Image 1 (cartoon, rainbow, N blue to C red):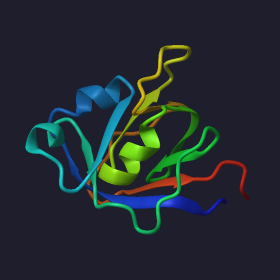
Image 2 (image 1 turned 180 degrees about the horizontal axis):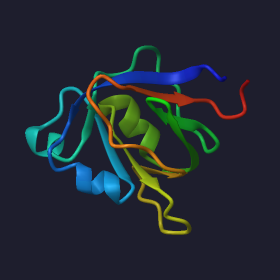
Image 3 (image 1 turned 30 degrees about the vertical axis):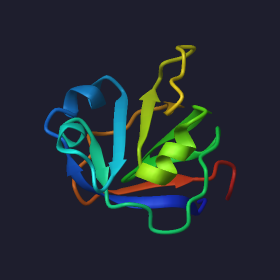
Image 4 (image 1 turned 30 degrees about the horizontal axis):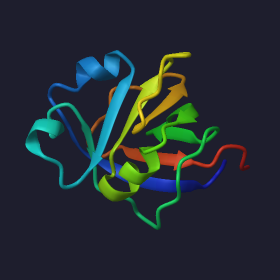
Length: 125
């Protein structure tokens, strides 16, 4: 199993986020996060180490479930490093990618407070 390049813990799941999760959209924010954004977000405690940028081929883990990142927007790593903010879109195929977003394939469960969130470098054993 590959080692995480980024890890954190879910500290809040917004009450309006479930519908987005069901649609395959996971909005992550590190603390602090404005209240209005926390309503629709998975809020995490912040990275537990030095920042390493996300790349296509990396794995996004929520608890014991994993999706494979297929595309990274031009501003995604900058936002992720500064704000802990990234938007993960699952199974959207050839849809246009917003600059701060990441595309991935696979399925994830509804997040719960206390779960681990990790990004692992793809291809590492």
